[in-house]
Amino acid sequence: MLACKTVVNYDISVVLPDEKTTGILTEGVKRPISTDGEQGFGIAIDIGTTTIAAQLIQLSTGAALKTVSQLNKQKKYGSDVMSRLHKGTKPLNQCIIEQLNDIIDTIKGEHDIKRVFLTGNTAMLHFVQAFDTRALAVAPYQPYNTAMNTYSADDLGLNGKFQVITAPCIAGFVGGDTVCAILACSMDVSNKTSLLIDIGTNGEMVLKHKNKLVCCSTAAGPAFEGAQIKHGTGSVEGAISSVLIDSGIHIKTIGDKKPIGICGSGIIDAAAQMVANKIIDETGFLDMDFLLADDIYIVQKDIREIQLAKSAIRSGIDTLVEETGIQYNEIDNVFLAGGMGSFINLESAAEIKLLPLQLIDKTSVSGNAALGGAIAMLVSEKIRTAAELIAKTTQHIELSSSSLFNDAFVSNLLF
Image 1 (cartoon, one colour):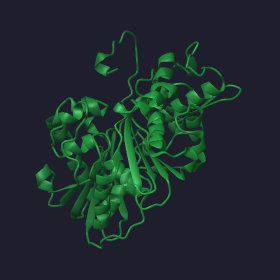
Image 2: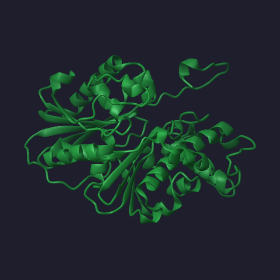
Image 3: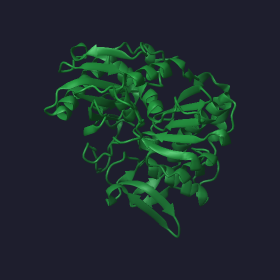
């Protein structure tokens, strides 16, 4: 529920997280590359729906010299992509350009910047480029432009005399950040069968088998980011991040602070422990509110939100595997990307059937793979060419019209 629509009829405390208390993921897997050997400096920026991460890069070596991260200030227009799309392009464009100018001014220091490379989901890149987003906001969610585009800073309203390149996108909800993650994980050049999963409000999945890349996106909702959960919170100090039920309830919080709520990794842990200890059954039925800490409960509605979110992600994975005609045991590597994927307990994810049990031992955390891919594209024309090929040749499966997905979604609601 939006804060402005919340009825306050008793004393409450309101916590407004800022950059000092919010965990913003800035590190991740990087692709081994040969740079173009250019002299000078560039900036790679990953524009996420919730957070923005940027690194100052030495172009000749690809080395990161400085990192800046901020919450995306577009959040005042809505926490999710769809809310922002319905506000129209102009205010969102003004907001992100102002913030990018602030980030670039902060990170460049005394360095002259030669190039800035921008990645993000399709909507974020549309806002940066002031593209018309009306078709992206309604089914079948058609993007205005998915190409890799090159501008002068002035073209976009950015302060400086540098070149700006935007990552190519695959589809309306599979954006440049996914293309960059594919590159960072070297999926396009590997002979192995690999699966990339980015768990978030919008979950993106890519399966590489033989020489073919297949992708999809699924609206998981914000439950794994602490939203729509009665006592949910973001990954801030005091958020319950780990739960164990063993002769009592044992919790850990971020920063070892007094618990103020429960974040995504804690939500998954709590659900898994409640399933394992038969506090909830396979249908998700919860007999009574479950106390985790002082005044912090898991309630029945929370369990339903978790079921919807985990079923969306798992069903997307199942659909890719079915469409490709392989079995789970044929997958060699699983790359878990993004902020949510970097902190979840894999055993808990398997317990609630968010991830297939047989893939857990093959799973590695990739962190902010989007930023890693953006750095590769910033310093290498060859990698930029590879990115364009990925965007053009990756098969996109529209899950809303997939009978495989719809059938899987119903069965995956169960624990």
